[in-house]
Amino acid sequence: MAKIKVTLVRSTIGAIPKHKKTVQALGLGKINSSNIHEDNAAIRGMVDQIKHLVKVEEINE
View 1 (tube, helix red, strand yellow):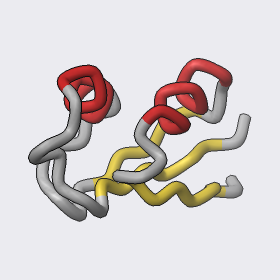
View 2 (cartoon, rainbow, N blue to C red):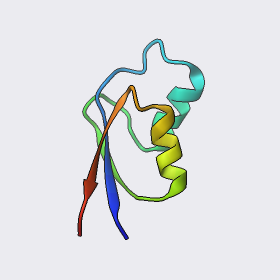
View 3 (spheres, one colour):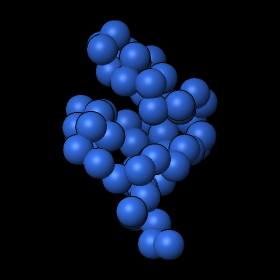
View 4 (spheres, rainbow, N blue to C red):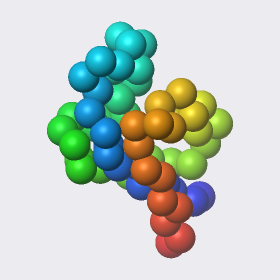
């Protein structure tokens, strides 16, 4: 199954609490931190909510 790499590129200061919790749920803490997730509908939905804060790269295995 394909994977995606999610990287936090903007700060969560000033973001609404729901977006802060989504960033934390994706395993991102500080700016430029990244995490690799399976590419599924749940993760894509989370990324879509915070697309203004993150960068997404597809990883081919």
